Structures are given as structure tokens and as C-alpha cells.
Length: 209
Image (cartoon, rainbow, N blue to C red; front, top):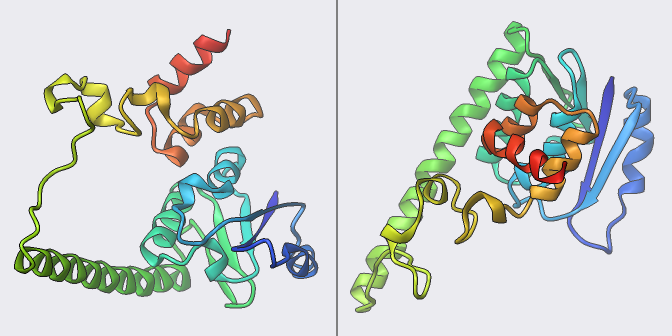
């Protein structure tokens, strides 16, 4: 199966312009959304596509930037897809990254990894510079605390999955995760795609029964 993915950032833009290229590339199902590419891939439809895709399938997009604007996040998506034996393709960039470890795919991953490492270093530098400026301006820096809640009040699961105070039961994508599994996605694949534990998904499904 070849899944097409199209994304634009604003309502003024139209995903339909990507359809001819996706269809020509062999896409049998096309998923589209209007959402900023700065949002993590696990909060977008890419996570759902990955949860229903099977080993040997392909996800194709008009260009690499449609997968996201954050290179670190895009690399994480590609690495996750590759671990699931799923091929990732970007038409305009003439890019195909296969899971079987061919030389071209490995080279491209190394290039992306190097660029992502540079992006991480620059991000770390910007954060440090911002903290230094804040200290020079006399701002008090400290950890986040929800009003009325002390750190030791949180359970181990809240700390492991701190989506908001309340833990996994308040996961913002809980409904999407349950739908993905009921639509045929595997527990393991969905858990990896949304970064939750399999035990959490089993518990949610049990609540619905």
C-alpha cells in the first residue's frame, strides 16, 4: 500500500494542488491536513498513517518539508518509519529512504542526522543565551509547578506521561489513539507512533468495553 500525505499550514492554502503528483506516484489513499509543520509529527496525521501501515508499505509526500519544518522531528519520523519497515518518499526532493539499509538511504540518513545534530546544537546555544540574558536582567528562573500541586503529589505514571496533571488519562490524543487501534492499527505500532505505553492503550480499550 502507498499512502499519500499532504499538509499545508493555513486555511488560505489548498492541499488539492498536491493530489496529481501523489496519484502519479502511486498513492492509493491520500491523507491531508491543515496544520503547522512545527507541530510534532506524533500529534499529526502522520502518526495515524504510521499506525495503520504495514511492513513493506510506503508513505509519500510532495516534498520533505511537508513532513515537518523541524528537521529533528522529521528525522525521528523517518527513523520510526524505517524501524517499522516502511519506506518514506518525497517527490520534489527525489528522495526515497528504504528500510532495507541500501547505500543511498543510509547516506541520506547520515546527512539528515548530521543536519539534525547541528540544529540541536544551535537550539541548545539559543536556550543557553536566553537563560543568560534572563539572569542578567534579574529574572528568577525555576522549574514549572502547577498551582496547588507539589511534585511529590504526582504518581509515577504522571511523571512518566505528564500530558497534564492527571497523567495518561488526560492524554490529548487518547480518542485518536483508540480510533487508530479500532481501525486496524496494531497496539505496538500505535504505541510507538504516539509515544505511549502498550499497557496504557490496553487500559483505555478496556474502559470502552
